[in-house]
Length: 290
Image (cartoon, rainbow, N blue to C red; front, top):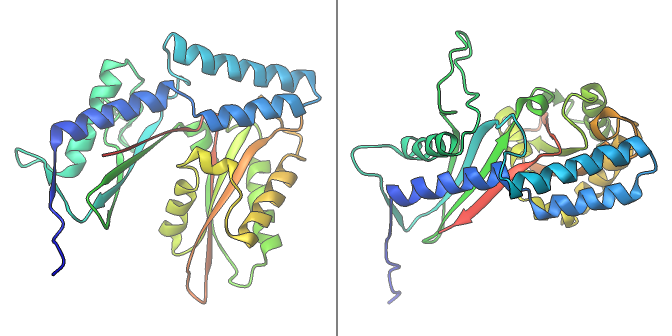
């Protein structure tokens, strides 16, 4: 007889502390894989202005962690991706729901670390005061673990994203062209060098979510995509984007983008949604597992 796996209890206070710490990490500590990409870019650059812009970014990263100060004055909106094991029981306490608990952690971080509150009502533009609510995505998975991944994104780059319905017969070349066009039209607005996340297929909202998830794990940006066709498309996107000449901070040069990643989802026979998620150089992510 198979032994039943024990239920694991995780309390609200632990989640709140963890979310607070992840928000701190994401705002103050830059992912090492992206430092590696910036170091590589500054060696490759020929333009003095581009080298100077990249050098300023690297100095900013070092100072942010040492002082400490936020990596960027736009401390973004917080997006949380939860994977909760099916053998996990969340003791949220006091009739709270999961999103309330997550928002308590976000609120604590933005108040304790004096991070700018940027969340407002879409019509009145009244500020919520503590950068909540966060955007929370939850998925139930097998096991007794809980994974929290956080993405913090400012709106200089967020405003440059796009989603569109392509012809279901669009070729890989046409898809690549749409992505390159999005970056070209964004110009210097998203604070290049950018990181490009693409969601291909699914429904409109699935494509947008996949484009987000493409940028959640910075170390994956250093590894080849296991899908050979997507790998070739990513390589071509990066090659063509870096020939646009926008360059770091829009100063010209060979480094308009540091990386490109595509996530795909099965879609309908009559459709092909494409979402392009452009991140500024300050791709702020954090991850924890309990």
